[in-house]
Image (cartoon, rainbow, N blue to C red):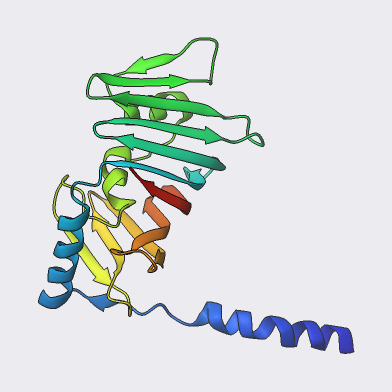
Length: 200
């Protein structure tokens, strides 16, 4: 009994923290100006490497693993290592099309990365928009609605039918960059946990 009480005492603060609602502030002119300044600063950031963990779900099945994403101007390379699910692959390409390797005996080619992911894995991942969202920016695919956190950084972004939830930011960088990005468009969910950023 004492052991159970000690466990409860240790866990209770964590439960209370988990139950605290996240503060979200509706966008106003001041917040949007600050966001526009972030976006101008990062607009030319198209040479970078990020590493972390990825999870994808369609509401019934999913996959997860470690990943690296290299962006070199209009060219990209996305490598997922998922030994548990057996779905390790390399996705690369640019304006001329996309190449998916590692899932079968021969590579798959297609006009764009999203179509290849959908065909080969059944994953609905908005890679074009995600390139902007992962930097904490609005994509150029259409109108976007933003809410902000108490830190005055984006907390929730709604765009192109997706809801992008920024759970954590690296405020040690200037400008700050996201560390945890959860994107959802029912029934699809994409979770990115970013462990490192490198700009080149």
